Length: 336
Image (tube, rainbow, N blue to C red):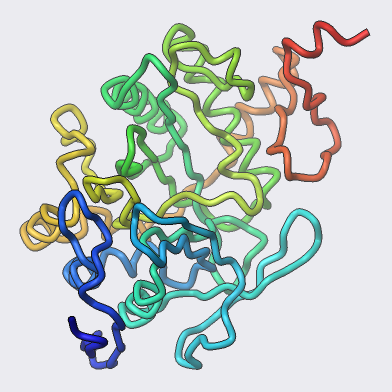
């Protein structure tokens, strides 16, 4: 078993230790296979990460082992990998790596990173998101096909609002739709826009879509996880590897593919061939930056005409002005 080898990453040499370590026992994929995968899809992977503060989800013993999220850059970060300072809801801050090339990606892979979690901001302005990220999360009793149906309805809604989304698989059962926006609104406003989009989808298909934060209220519906737009919440990047036994990846898709696609179609073995054939199907995303104002106008109407204000934040987030009580409904009914 080789102790280490060197990989060429666009002219930069990156050392990979223990390349033969098995990361996905069910498929036999090794650490070297993961590195070669990212080399094969490097342009797309870097496009999704470039200039974004990025949290690393690391699996030092492979997908079946324990994992942890690394937010702060380690002391051994090479000087050629840029960083950006982000602030948490608590007011504390951290410096996170901002991958600017495939060399930075492979450096993280060597430390067991399978899934990259970039913030929806760029290093130059970490307080104003440049992406509205909509997470369509299947609940028990629903599946990927239900998420696809919700995504197609979302596409229609976005078009009505003058927006365009780019869909991708989560790597699990769900779908993510990213909308590039002008970085003119803070996290509170962009999260409010995500809530407005979710509520409009819920009105159009109340039996199939929900924005209910409490699981006991969601039922067998697709949950629009609006809190993915809260500060310090991130979504797995396009091309990230997910730690399931069959080694799936988060696959960028074209809208016309949704009806025929399935998450298991995209993994460490199949994605490089797809990428060689089609390239990065989200390559043009950075050429767009949409106006969020129409969505915020929808949020204003929800509050003014329907009395629909804010929704609960994640439990680790400080209490926000105007936020409803973070009390599970079944417990609230029993409180004196």
